[in-house]
Image (cartoon, rainbow, N blue to C red; front, side):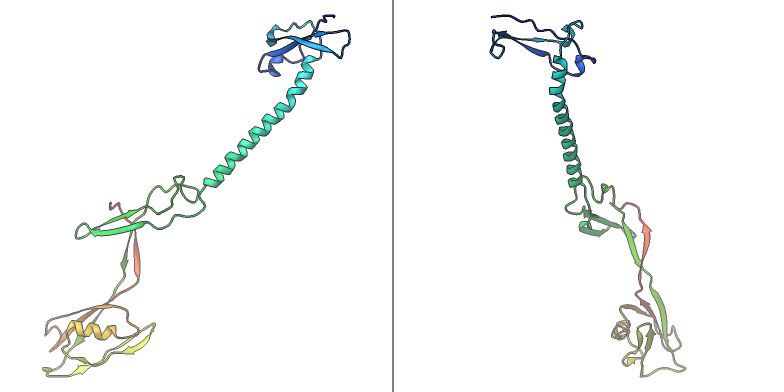
Length: 235
């Protein structure tokens, strides 16, 4: 049996770039027939222990073996990046938030109110529509009412009688049933609200004599809602 000496040399680039762990060499006992050999010892060396004066193709062959590992590492990193992007897309909200839940309004004073509510259901911590909800805007809607007056008067004292009122708007022209000359504010209001072109009204009546020998009725027609703009925090 013959012992053969194995020599190697460093590649053009430092081996530190090609090998992160120590290089493991396997020494073998070679017989006369080179196809038969027996492993006798294995040892580990570091890149800095390799002598630059020796020459062999071991470094190149090892690099060729490690190159597929680099490709696998790049593919692994790319796969992890795709998973991260997929998870981000999965958790990104895609819809606007719903309305607040369990709204409770209570009077706080003669001129203010208290509004309490819970956030919308199924709101993710990441937010909705790409951004988290950072606050709520409370607005107060008021009606723009129309006020008209209606007078019942006579030259002399009124003993009995009645009248009808014709009301015209964009929805048409309607006439009430007969209203007593001294009808109360409730009776006058009911007569107006029976008209198809009247939604809701409020009526007040003056004392006798506000009009000559009669009454003055003040009629408030419910108008459209007008948002008064942003309000200060009420909670």
